[in-house]
Structure formats: C-alpha cells, structure tokens
Image (tube, rainbow, N blue to C red; front, top):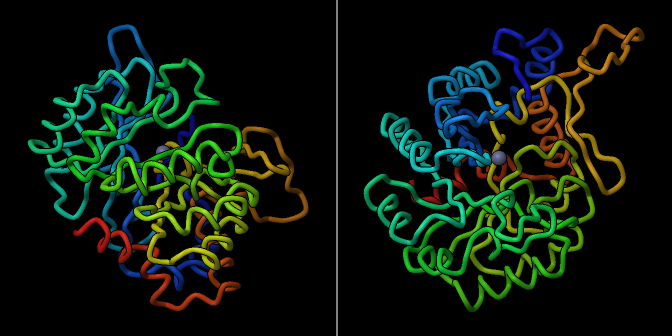
Length: 330
Ligand SMILES: [Zn+2]
C-alpha cells in the first residue's frame, strides 16, 4: 500500500523531528508492534500488496526516523490470506537469530495445530502468537469474537506455555464492545490466566470512544498490556496515560507498511481512515509545510498527550522501551 523509502523523508519531516520529537524520544526504543514480510512467502499464485521487509530494512528505516537511537523489535507475523504460514514463520525466526535484543510472535491461523505452535515456541524462540481476524472461522472478519480466530485449542496451549498474544480486536467498536470485554475478562481472570495479552492499537481504539468505554473494566483485568501503534489521535493516548497503569503501555509503530507514509490515520467521529494527501491531490498553497510521516503524527500525539497528562521522563522512557523490557523479560 505505502511505498516510501528512507530517502523520501522530507524537510517537513526533519523539522518536526528536530523541533518537536528529538527531545521526547529516548536513546533506546523498543517497537512492540511491527511486521516482516517477503512476497516469496505467498503460496503459488497468491500475491500480497505488502512490500518486502526484513530486519535490515527495519533498522535502516528506524535509523532514518529516530537518528542515533538503539531500536529493537517485537516482530509479529504478517497476516495475509494465501500466505505460507510455516515458511513465513521460519523466515522471521531466522532473521531474529541475528538480533538477540528482539523477539517475535508466530503468525497463527485457526489451521495451526497445538503441536506446531509448541514446536515453534521451543525450537524457534517465538514468545507469543499473532492471530488475526481475517482468518475467522466464521468468514466474517468484522464481527468475529476472539475464539473464532484464535481457537480454544490454541488458547489452551498458549495458557499452558504462558505465551503472549498480540490481539487486534475485531467487532465494530473494538475494546468498546461488551462481548469483547466479557471474553477478555473471562480469559484473563478464569479460563486462561497464564496468557499475557497485548491489545494492539490502544486496544483497537483509533478514536476517543472505545477506550473511554473500556478503560474502567480493562484496568481491573490482570495480564493486559497495550501497544500504541498506528493511532494518530491524542485522545486515546490521553485516556490511557491518565486512566491506566503506565507500566502496561508499550510503544509500537505497526511498521513500514502501516505508518511510514506521508499522511495519517484521520478520525471522523467514531471511525477512522488512513489518508495520504499526496495521492489525493490535496492543495497546500497556503504554506510551504507538507504532510509528515504517520509515525511522526503518532509520536507527536503521544507527546502532546504526555504533556497534558504530566508524565515524567521516567514514564516516557517506560513507554518507549523499559516497560516492554521488563514485561518481556529481555
Ligand atoms: Zn500490525
């Protein structure tokens, strides 16, 4: 979808980095939500719009956007219909064998057996699972419940092994959905107490609304963390920074294919959409400034929310890397 290279970083990007972000982003960064992918992982005759991304490319991009920072990753398998899951997971494990400071979650579809999962955890160093709603056994990616794309059999093995699960919630209101909250409450407190959940994209709250509905219940659940990836609006950050335990919040970018483009995830009421002005003929005759990288929009929103919430330097370092280091036992 997005096809920038680090060479496309603009004067407007650089100005925002130098004037607004460089003194906010600490020396170390742990990106708890990013993806690797190669077209060669697709099955015969299948194609994905994703671009090829490996460890070297992620490092190159991160040096371009966060100059001089030491960056490590939690790499998640890339959900695509038509991907060869085994080939893809083998590639991720191989790439990460060269970066001892990074970790990975295994791409997991309902077709993966408990044996395959257990073998990849013990033999290949994966620490968790990356399921996704497009694999729902109901065929409905927009209204499925957690167990419909991460089966009870798989949840059982994840519980047995004490795995992490990065969960991009489905259903129209994400974490603002009562059924999702009931399921998470049942799983964290009773049925699967050893699974540790990272709720992606502020528990899938790209707008102000879902997390405001959910935070009072989520806060009381054990084994819940959040990544901030791809959310470009400061209001969900403000809710998390003021209402949740800061230690449960991880920085994440969603990686090259999702937030390294000039534009942003724009909120319209309670819905959102990635908007790329350069491809929409938007005019900016009133100013020499140009749209900046979506990842910079995210970090700028994090900064504004952190200022309003009066987070300390320690809190901010926690969000950017230390919380993940402690929780993932790196
Ligand atoms: Zn993602």
